[in-house]
Image: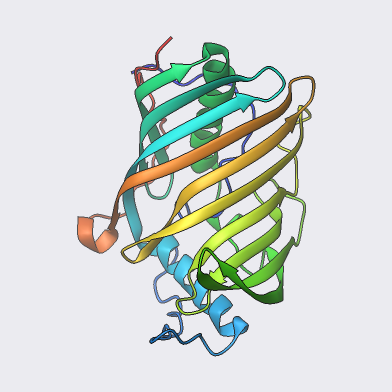
Length: 267
């Protein structure tokens, strides 16, 4: 396995701290009971409460997740593009590894965009406390906007404003299912640029329910980079295997090492 390049381009593997967080004390409040028979939860506030309780519980009980991840990136000015398919393995709370499966396209895009993005993701998981970027009231101000239809699904739309300018937080909207209180989509702009080279990062991230967990399904990023210009990135996840602490029978393990020694990245 080949170590990922130890330089960072953008820390934009957004944002929602479902997959990395501290080992919180148990006893977080349970979410309100989901509505049935096509009915909605009684209010947007109740749906937001259900979402936040679920997110906190997930931070507490998630042990291991794996999935097949594909990353497509394109330099829009030059039409250079590449696609990297990898196996992603996360062990809560601070261990993340990628193993290469297939690659096709421009090697410059692979080495300077995709690999650096993956490295920034690994670095973020190692260093970041999930609670500091979680979508909850200590990090954001919430404002209910409307009930909307999202791909045939009724959702509550909330506007979010970060309480501080911090890497990993964003200004935008979240969409919460009116029946379950589960997050369906987040969209917006990073509140703080990861570096001088990055002028801004806009994103949309869709989610999927896997058993009792909610995981990223697809993330679309448009990054404005000085000199290089716009970079479009699409990250897709499939074939999830997600396990709780109860399922594994193990405690969450604090990992300080980087599990990226030779994932066989094509050169």
